[in-house]
Amino acid sequence: MADAHALAVPLPQPLTHLDLRACQHVAFLSDVHLHPDHAATHEAWQHHLQTLRTDALFVLGDLFDVWLGDDVLDHPSGDFERACLSRLRAFSQTTPVYWLVGNRDFLLGPAACALAGMTAISDPCVVHADDKPWLLSHGDALCLSDTAYQTYRQQMRSPQGLAHLQALSLEARMQLARSLKDQSQTHKSQTMDWVDVDEAACRQWLDATESQVLIHGHTHLPADHALGPHRTRVVLSDWDAQARPARLQSLEWQRGQGFRRRELLPA
Image (cartoon, rainbow, N blue to C red; front, side):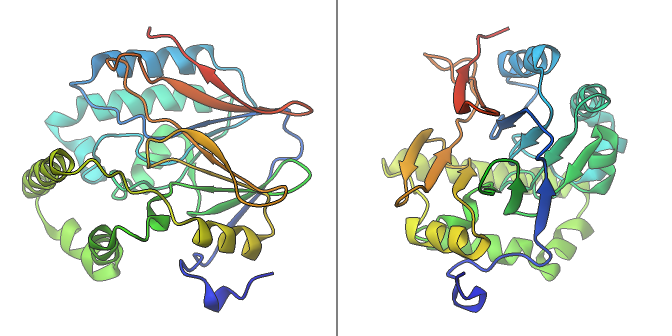
């Protein structure tokens, strides 16, 4: 097992461990980016929840395009967010839903999780379902070459950064989110490079948790990558029903059959 103190990306304490060895089927989503302006994606997501039959659903971050704090649920502008969480609540009545934080929804808190019936888990999280554990993450913490983002992430996720954000009014957070999104889109338009995860850091995490498979999102680069003998990095797709072709994909695991990607049709 790797020395936890030598990891390029420290593991959280406590680290969530889930025992799903009784499950026959598990589904995974990430980067759905729900937003009232993305009606087709929202409809496809709702249809997926209506038709999905699984023993557990994992949402690996960025369920919403932006989440500015749980106080949006009490605001007149929060109709869309309340409706999405209510839809998840209906699904969670029969199927456990596990959620971990993404880079766009890191202010999603206990009130939102309770309304949705979701269980918050650490990033990463160790899942015991198959012969060897799986390690689940959003993936942004592993994008080490994006030093500007890692500095921003560390500042925003620190106790001081979170306290500062939560002290702002919802309107001020809305304005800040618009400014950050404009900066991000400007940066993307100026470069063709898409930052990927650091595979050495991925291997360290797998070693430290004695896991065989790392499943993550964030990069919007769905693919399977070998990380050495019997170890794999599985990258989830983002969701965009208006892209051509549409990007609507679920990763699903079936006992005895392993992982497969299922392409979904727009609703």
